Image: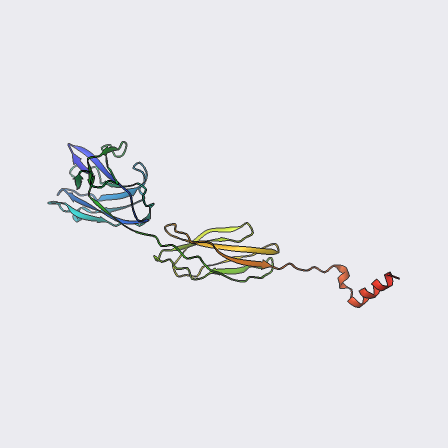
Length: 261
């Protein structure tokens, strides 16, 4: 935001991330000596959409005699590399509450454009003859390994059994969620979060005899998913003896011999 010719400006810079997790941004910024309200920087995937994440800094962080790099370390978010996002800066529309975000004339950043609004976002206009000064920071999201499922592989219908994944470790230390599919048409949905390095267990029972393929997959806070781990479980068929089978074998053989005469 800055004040120019008595108008209140909100500024935005589009950019295309190269990492799948956005962690923070830095702006070359300054303020006037009378600024009293925080300066907020947010990230959006649509200029007219909600903030995906944001961070505010107080006036005492900003210089008044020159521009300096100011860090906005917000909550990490998952982004799609190559897609367009927007850094949006704003503060309270109050007299003498002035901040400036440095701009470089010329198309110094070909993957983005400057936008501004003088009516608090009702209408955005493009300013194509320059780019705002900014730095983005991010990291790639590491894939999760396919889980190994342990538990009983033979059992009885109606009895509840416990199944566990092996120790689930996220390479980035993120929290983990698990999805169980029980092979009988039922599933758990996403359960969690669980801490990285934790063994994850769940209970299930089957109402009919048969062989079932249990499946489990993991995902982290940022949506990276593992492949499905599987385990085959058999609920043995029970042999129900009929009423005749309660007759001792010797008498059944004898009865058969008599009936053949």
